[in-house]
Length: 257
Image (cartoon, rainbow, N blue to C red; front, side, top):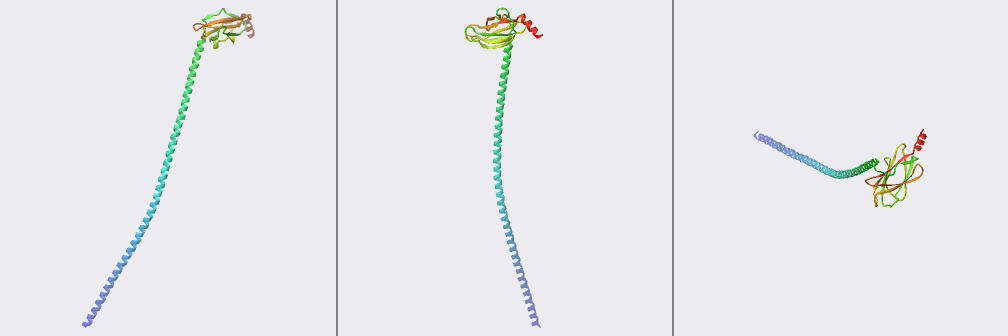
């Protein structure tokens, strides 16, 4: 019995040891399997990370290309914007120059207009001053004529020494600053009835020989040719009075009726 008991115990012990050994082996196998699974997972994760890193690198390269392209475009746009600004500034400068030229022309026209106005004013002043108030020297007595339209001739009968005269008839200039020559100059005068018509001669430029002298020719009421000498200087002028003959005045009055 003791032997059998010992054998049984030995058998049980052997079984227990075998069971424990199997459990230990199984645990080791499980651990190894776990380690293998962990390694595979890590490798997979590493591959996944590496793939993501490669994708990130590709994306980074794309971004860098886009940035480079954007920078180039930005630089081009900046250059174009600068060129546009320069062109705009040049156009503005050109416009300013054109405006300045227009202003200068306007000023020039204004100056010319002002100068012309001054000239016209001076002419008007001179014309006003030329209206005679007879107080010079009368040539002979009042001359009677039988036509309301009177033609007179004026010339220099002596030396052509540069005498210039102005003739004023009834307050209006009929010959201005005329240089006398030996050629007769004709002037048509319209006489006003019932009054004395005054033809005055003023010296505007003195010749080389003394006072200005001129010959005046016309026809009187008898149809006779009359020549008178008129002498003028800066200090005085000479004048002739013309008057229509009564018969002429009556005939003109009758023609009006």
